[in-house]
Length: 356
Image 1 (cartoon, rainbow, N blue to C red):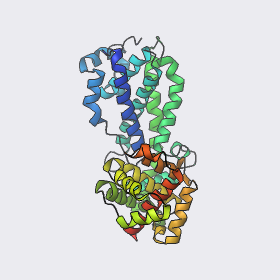
Image 2: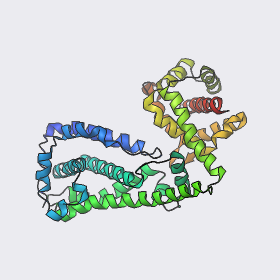
Image 3: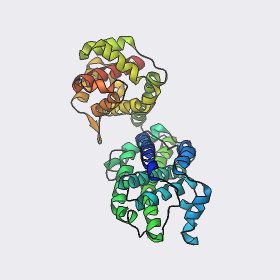
Image 4: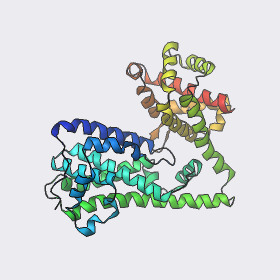
């Protein structure tokens, strides 16, 4: 029976822990949408252990509640995983449903990282990753849920709905405890493994020249160009004044507000979001078509009319980005259609001037 988390956490620590875990989960789930992304949990390790008051000593005491056979499982050999599991036990006993669920999401992210490391141990190609996603069967979870991040959310929510009554009870036995963790790892492993099989099949075909030039061009357009443009905008903060003026003219937005918007999004924190939006735009129409002004205007109209890929709507992603800038609170008082029109013109014109 699992009777104690062996964590010395006070009730006054709960809010701080909730905010910290929320930030990790939110950041990593969002980043997982990027091709080949593997969560970098090492960067959280020391702060996570500190806020959880975890050390090897209380970790060993926690594991003593398990049989020798169970404690020998791989999931109990990693301090980060053990600390997450201790958090699950602690807040489950406290009947803190929201925080227990957050810890289960953190466990999913940790397992996804481990599975990714095994499936892609050396090198992962962004273009091949995109190609594999495009060629997945219609029934694969990464396809039906509209991306890897959404698939992880679905798996975690589904299993948590099944196991939350057990986690939140006072009768958590060893068998149930291990199954709650192992089922999560198994479900994630199955999805990543089948995706990796397709990835390596395409890699082998590409080496033999079997992947069409059209497929390669499409993937490069959605990834390599997106990476280049997002780096130009966000990493180097390059604002194209002529493009800005043209986007202002076409949208009718206030010039000062437009300038501030562009300055606010042109920071490294927004690079991944900009890249993802460009990838979505490429799904609306291949980026190479932006070189024709009539086609570029058509793409802008499609974005305004709700163009989407999977479960992602381009204009919603744009508004999420704009509302999360420093000016966001003011932008919410403006007409969303005008904001989307301005940013669609700015981004597509910026791409046009960069590649055409």
